[in-house]
Length: 202
Image (cartoon, rainbow, N blue to C red; front, side, top):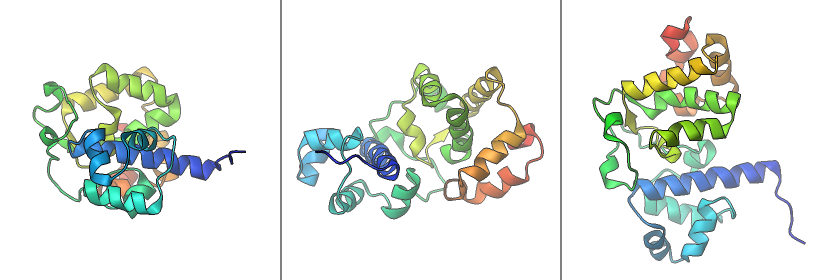
C-alpha cells in the first residue's frame, strides 16, 4: 500500500517541482536536454516538475548544480535568487515574455511577489494564474526574484487588486508578516513594513 504524504511532504514536493521547472526554463533547456545531462529519463524529469515525485537529495543537488542555482534557500523559499541587482537575461531562457512587459523595465519580481502571493491567498491560485496567462506570462517567471518587469504590468496588478477590492494596506502588510517573506523581500522588507498608505505600499 502506497504511503500517503504528510502535508509538509506534499508542500515540499510542490515547491521543489516549481523550482526545478523554473530553473530549467531559465537555463534554456528542454526536458530532454536536462534529462541527458542529469543521466535520468525524461519521464522522471516530467514527474518531478509536475510534483508527482519528490527528488532525492542527490538528484536535487545535481539539478541545482546543473541549473546553477543555490540549493538550500531555493528549496526553503521556492524562489530562485540570482543575487544580482540587474535584469536576468530572459532571452537565453525558454520563457516568452510579451514585448510590452519588457519595455522600460523598472522593478524586479522580488518587489511585486508579495502582491501576487496576496492575490493568490485571497482569491486562489486559479485567479492569479488566469490573470498572468491572459497576458501571455508564464506563472513560473515570477519564481525568479531578479527577473524584471515594468510599470504597465504593475498597473494591471493594481487594477486586479482594485477589481477584487483588495487594496487594503493593513491586509497586505499582514500578509507580508504572516508569510515571513523576509528571504524574498531582502532589502525591500523595511519599505513594506513602514508604509502607512496603500499608495506608499504600491
